[in-house]
Length: 336
Image (cartoon, rainbow, N blue to C red; front, side, top):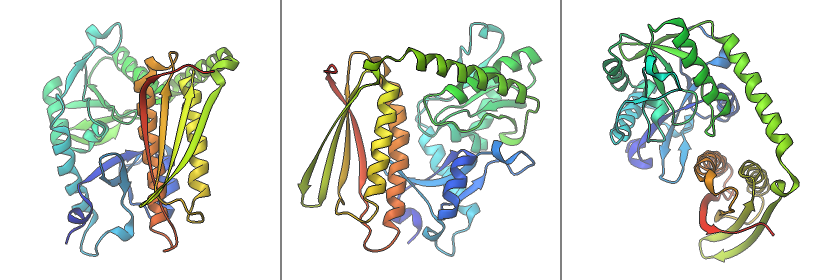
């Protein structure tokens, strides 16, 4: 029986260099995105996962049968990627900025795996056709995001594309992937555009200053987070229901991350909890409009936490992994 038959469809997933450095020692399968010469910290990695619907679990070296080669695994994941992205609307023109009339930008959107389209020559060739260009400049700044322009545009237009992509990378609500602008020829990544480092430094400073300004404007009320928890005993294990409510969505997510990580560390095979952790987020009038930001952040957090639990489950037999879930309640309440 093949790995696919046991675990389900395998997908490629682009991850940052920092993430790969953390998980590779644990045996998670990762391969460099770009095989050419590039500063290591600027080169993302490709991981492989099986999609379980609500979350994904990453493949480890010990998961593979001896007769499965990496090339075969990669090709199999690309087949699944094309199936997943077939439901999108395809490459669409995007109004990138207020001066976008003289800069044609196209985007692939509507799917968790859109960034990974850069791995598929077939999908990228459609971008060539859309832009009528043999050279593409492509950015994959964050999870689920991919943008492309004609790689032969004038320098001023190219710099606008770089700056807009870097803002997505540094100030995105999704997990960042790469700040590099990649060269794509005949659907394949052949290199990257050099000389963008100064623009990258400028955007990094700009975003850092904006974060400082936001921090100064957060008052005591928006910093408050109400947290409630209860353990429910069930036949298949214990369920811990955690409820969070706040008036600042970023403070809310930060608190959820801190509490969840603490739970994951505490119940690392040493305590009895072996069922589920349900994270329930109650909307308040001040964070209701940020629902999409909360969903994107929580999807990334739940993916990370369940990967930690998967690693625990692959450890000693006495380990008792559990599953994290979350829901954004339709109920609207106010902080007391």
